[in-house]
Image 1 (cartoon, rainbow, N blue to C red):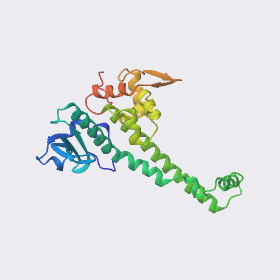
Image 2 (image 1 turned 60 degrees about the vertical axis):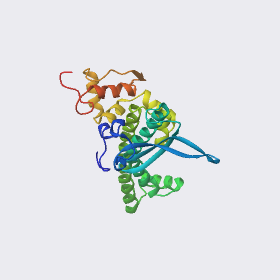
Image 3 (image 1 turned 30 degrees about the vertical axis):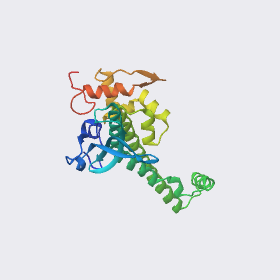
Image 4 (image 1 turned 90 degrees about the vertical axis):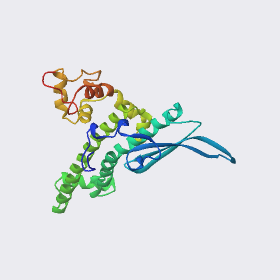
Amino acid sequence: MPTMQQDPQLSDLLTADDIEVRRAGFGYETGTAVVWKQEEWPGGGNPSAVRHGIALHAYLDGEDHNRLRVEGAADIDDPQAQDALGRLRLGMIATHALRYLKPAQQDIETIGDPEELISKDPVLRGYFHQRVKEGRHSPQDLALVAEVDAKTAQLNKARRRYAVLLWRFVAHLHGQGAAARDIASWTSLPTSMIERRISSVSTAGAAAILGIEAKTWSGYVARGQAPAPDDHIGREPVWHLSTVLGHITARPGRPGRPPKNS
């Protein structure tokens, strides 16, 4: 898996197939696994009552991630246990992917608003810009403008990086079966925004997911090496996220790079 300094491709992110599922006692606590065992625990509000079932314990790279109990289940094949296992796996997959998304979001917050280098008061900032525009500026004013411009460029770069990683996060979790409301919760974004990303992937979004340039994706589409748009919003072509993910699955090798004889 890539380091935190590298931006992951979809193939670098954790999937359900990467998560071991084993009965307790085999040492899988040191890896990425869901370990289960039969367990008894006191009943709520009644110390004399005893509940029976299985306990599931999730480990992510050896770290304690989450635990769930399933009352009445005899083993991991119980339908209720399988449902709990699915929820644990999705949580582990999301947590792993957030290791890349959250730092990118924090970079944006750390940079902050470049205009606040001038002043936190929007009225004073307006006076400053008017003075510069009219040529009534000092050398110190010009130096401050240059500093604001440099920080704005840094902020725009951080935002572009976050946008790419967000597309990949949404695509990956959707491909792993996560509901839009859960993806929204993990990203702290409105569910409606996640639903739009799922139903209407732009050219830039498809390119971000695949790790290629937008013009490259457009070229693939024009040559029939990538799927035709599912719809248009105005003049902008859009694809359903499942269409983009299906294209990735159908193409061996690097994500989104079709063979020349396609």
